[in-house]
Image 1 (cartoon, helix red, strand yellow):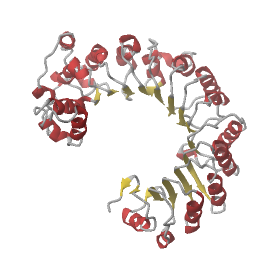
Image 2: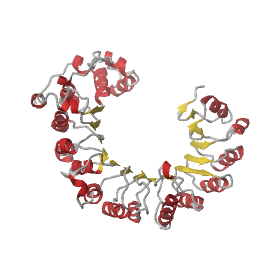
Image 3: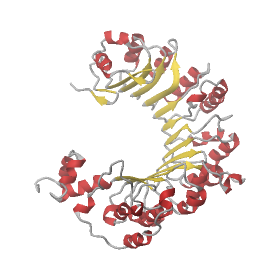
Length: 479
């Protein structure tokens, strides 16, 4: 084994199934390191189901330095809260002691329990113990790059808020941790608590926020301060010098003026290259014009707002978005550098013109386009495809169509010869099986019937008319 560099052996060993790799961990250091890395590289646990022994393992620096991705689900179990309250002091003392792990304990898994076996609550950490342990061992996760915190519906404020308040601070840059990606999922009240101590993340490149409705009454609900404007927005703004990706999803309705003030308080984000706001709004009376200040020259990947499915049939929801999209494209300096675009051009009469305007503006660099929720009529398709012919970098295309026939494929093959991936949602495709496109170089193809993947056997028949195809729905086609 000494004849080959270690990197080669790491690459070879990476093809070994995880369950077999664990068995081989004692063979040599290469397999040991690889098995340990796979075991602890990405971890996910809930405060409602974590055991003290598992927390003890994570407190070991030998394990902690291998964690790169951690997901923490904040769940408060009443039965555990009412059970044992000691053990955390012992555990925290152990966290500060050097541990000498053995291969047997590093890879040992808990025995499986039958459905009739109950969890021994005396071995389970209650909510305060679990959060306290995470806060204690967080500085030892020196290589963590992605952190996800998801708040569940049952976080009763008076039992949980004071406990989770200091949770983010140990993961900040101040203690030597260089997070690259942070995902926060919770109600605005819970995000207020998590961000209240103003954690610093000087290396953060990606921020994903999910806002949900508050499940419990809180003292803060009656306050005049806006969580979005006064707490969340300043937090995002402090990341502006280095933040490259921002994603916002919202499941709660906000007033138009609050949204306007929120995006105004965020900007400018000069390093922002990817912005995803496709699920950021629920039935707004108008879309915030201040949002346009985030469309900087550096922006390369953009997902524009969608209208929630249940509201699609309401005409009043279409016009505000249509008007906002038109106002955005009226600024001739926007969207010139886009590489990828997700857009819902609305179902209004202006929808096709909006779509064509965005294609024309971003044609020079556009490599990926996804047209959401609007099905193109037969007479609209030729104009749509002809506009795409000006996008010489386009390799990935997704759109919906009322009726898919061979004329569409004929035009696509003529005007988009360099397309690599094609995803079409349609209800008609049978005539395609009679065609043969020998000169088309498309490699990956997706065809859907009313948003459901077409049966693979049918797709194999269609693939015979496309000799260049190597994969269907992203899965390689076996020869």
